[in-house]
Length: 288
Image (cartoon, helix red, strand yellow):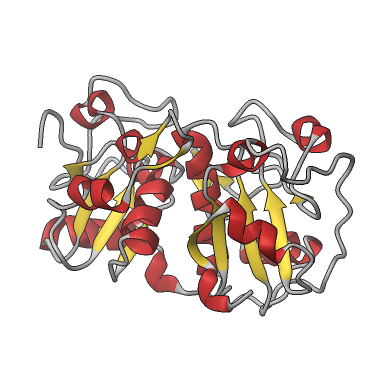
């Protein structure tokens, strides 16, 4: 399989054709997010896939009161190494394929791998649900058996991540567009995440509910044409995707950066739960 195949989405057909490739690492990330986890993985998964629970394995870390932050780099290096991932491997991330929030988990793992310097990863379009929809495709059962490698040699791609300070500068200077991935009720300040100290949005942000990018009937992202329309109002140039905990915002980041091919798209992993820990950081309410 060529490296160029490993950016954005990969179809079940293309993945099936590449099974057995020596550089292919398939990671099934089912967890409590999709109501599955280890038991669902062991009941059936893509042949050769390893299980890494998105919640349990620590793809995100609680820092202070913000629950979705980037974990320490040594933790990520060890986690990725335990999965047997080496710098030149092609990685396919397999979500359950049941909801937008489930796809967002895969997008967050994808972003994390790209952030630490890995070059080739793709998300299985439609997840395991799409894989299993064709009875002719093989399904493996039983536990995961990784072939651990050394801790991954992290080379941070800092441009992919926005911190609270960088986001504050962007909000004040208008040098980057802030894209809020949450539903309207969160954006306008009618509800908030438990860990956030205030309701509302970062001043100057525009609302783009991440769920609108996903088609629950198919378990896949909407068409490129529909996605281009959905994000068409986001001005050209740098953009920062955020939400409550850097989870749902990963889906918007993935669409803008990896599907629509826009440059200079960053994810603010701390998002509103981190932003509101400092009372000096402004919060706006109401419609944009």
